[in-house]
Image 1: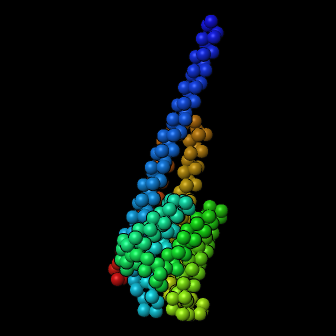
Image 2: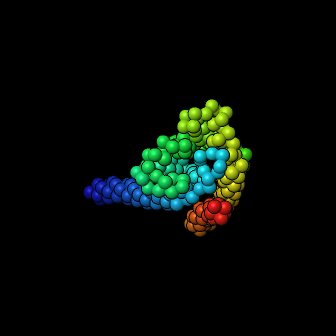
Image 3: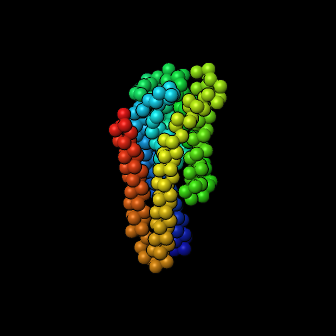
Length: 253
């Protein structure tokens, strides 16, 4: 009888332990989901606030803006999927009429106008850049190349759409929709790549610290808290850099 009761208790404890593990995993997934939704909302809000500010240029109907730089940061901070979701939400908000597009405009007319090709091109730039981030190495030049390729895809859609809008050939479209933006976009890509490189180096130092904690048989919880602080610091630095460029552009208006 004692043996039977012991087995029953053991089975009951196993079931209870399994339920506890499942509940813990469910709670972690819920917290992670809430955090991801919050970050998507934050980056969508940042895009909606910053994208309307733009600098018109006389040689092109497409103004200069920080949209591409924001999307680079969004891919890094949120990841490919969540960055894509954030941009789709931003795009939908603009299409329903909210003034979140360049020049504080909105509606389907903006999508049908000269900038429509770039708005569609961003839908392809984000996943391409994100996939290249994940597949390529973490060096400056590989991250730089990933953003360059993503931007070229956006240029392609924007140039083709401009050619259709303005009745230009492809060379003329490049002169209107690509060449005037090369210096600014190059500066944005370099800055974003430098930020990514610094973050990767910080992650490497955190990994070494975690290994040292485990090898030294010390508690791992301080390291986890340190990693969370570093993650928040990286995000803050990204937003700080964005804010600096944003205010510089405002001063140029």
